[in-house]
Image 1 (tube, rainbow, N blue to C red):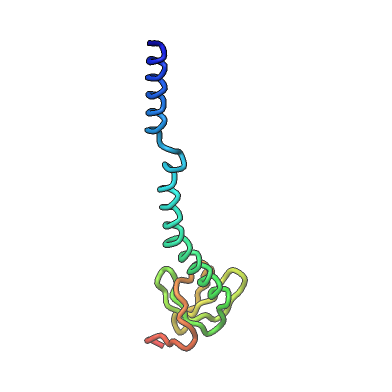
Image 2 (cartoon, rainbow, N blue to C red; image 1 turned 90 degrees about the vertical axis):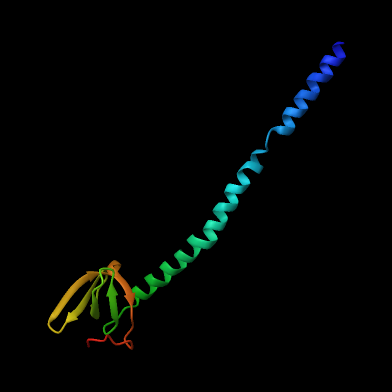
Length: 113
């Protein structure tokens, strides 16, 4: 009778261990979702941002840009942090480099110019 009770307890303990999920198995779906998220969203965004920063650093006089506020203009001069932008015939403004949204290039002429 004692052996039967011990054997019964051993079977119950074995069954409890079989039901308990593995910690690695529980985290695996979260890790896979993060890897997929990184590959599909974060990595391409970083590549695009790095390319944009490189283009902004290589701006020169005569390049046509559109600011993040939607202002079209021609680059007249570039300093360390500022860009002098011609937006009309007698109107120049200074903007920060971080305000550059799209670089249209020197060969791509704006319609109004």
